[in-house]
Length: 96
Image (cartoon, rainbow, N blue to C red):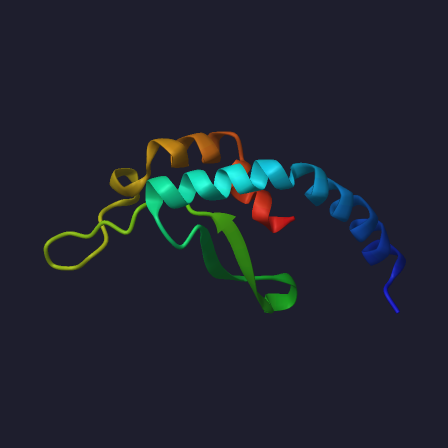
């Protein structure tokens, strides 16, 4: 049985996701067209008590590499749409 906090989270999150879904679809299409697939960035991070969890964000950088195969520095891979998404924190919406 879900806890009260979990129930409260779902009561707020589900309607918010429904209302924002057209906006999500627009962002997904825009990122797919400008950056290609995948649209989401996934990263394993340490969580509470050191237990790892996976964080999801909209992708803001390309996978451009140098001639030797190493990724270019972040500032060279960050795109215009990526700068906008980060400045407005829209890249973090998938965390909902």
